[in-house]
Length: 247
Image (cartoon, rainbow, N blue to C red; front, side, top):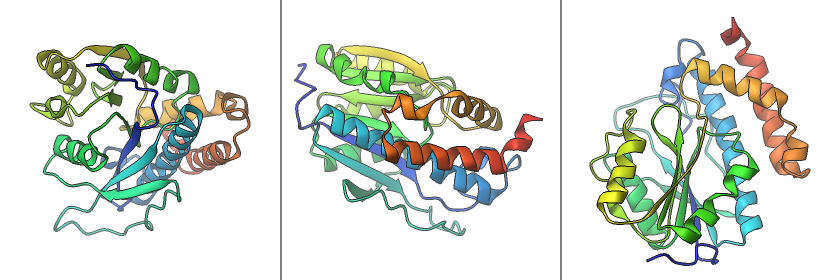
């Protein structure tokens, strides 16, 4: 049953990895050094956290939860400092053997009520796109937006739907389609939101550079200093360490 998605009970959950050198953004390593790949991960996550906080304030919804995947057993690497999202956030360790279990467990921790999931790989989500999520949940049980590699940049739902995480080939180009099929199979209504760009491979970094160079963040986010400062840090990092990707 569709609930009032605009009520203050909705929680934003950001799923992220620790910035462990050599263990994060691994498909960028080679084009970038392991350290620079981890630094890019942190810079992108910083932007997502700022966007999510602005979204919560604007929409008057309840809470922010950052679920962080810890290092896998037996993997060594330098961690580039703890992730410290700020006082508005609740920090939670991810628990589960795959991404679906970890998302479901984070959702349970949040109380099983209305949620919007975001990831750390879509740092330049525009305000107009984020603004489409809650209206979609006003008319459907689930809202989802695809990325170009077959995944999704957001998944929102009005009530706990563990079926959305079952039978999914995580890390493949089938994730989005399989999640939509899981929703339809569970008998829940679904709105498909516009697609957006994530950052996983070197060509994605080049495309991100071009977007952040041409976007006027101060106008886009109404002179929100926190967001603009996060984008300045991201832009600076891209210019310093990723310029060789354009050749």
